Image (cartoon, rainbow, N blue to C red; front, side, top):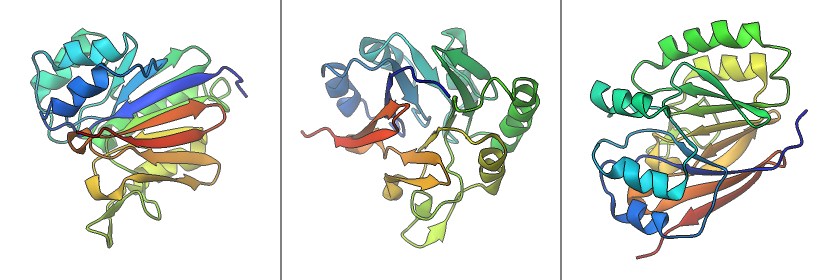
Length: 208
């Protein structure tokens, strides 16, 4: 079990609306990590604004992000789709929205090799949600979570799963001991601040 304090700023579902990202880049949030759960949908100066928030960024593409965007973040060293990356005392792994099942298959191979090392220190950044009670609830009544992510959670027991995709289901809950956070879409000003290892969550909104 790790005891290193880490402050994570989670954003995503920007959908090329940079107004709130620009405002966020001017706030003194000072996270240890900026976690971007995909659906940025544009390139160009968006990365410059992200880097103003933090130089330590992890990213997974959303289902609306094309191959070029995914490649752009890979070139900067930010894309962790299908990868496991150790940052401080934590292991971060990514599940992108383009081909999540393929990403999960890749992660299983890598996680199995370090299964003992990641106990109590694993964090998942996913575009799609797992199947939950409320953070995967589309249109207020349809559960859109992927059970494949639940199987991964059951097997490796991560501290935290961060996701987006379901804009209307902003919130957080627990699956067993795992904290699940849907930060909501930044295109509407929503973001989340998460503190580990204490699993403290603050759901925030930028006001115009």
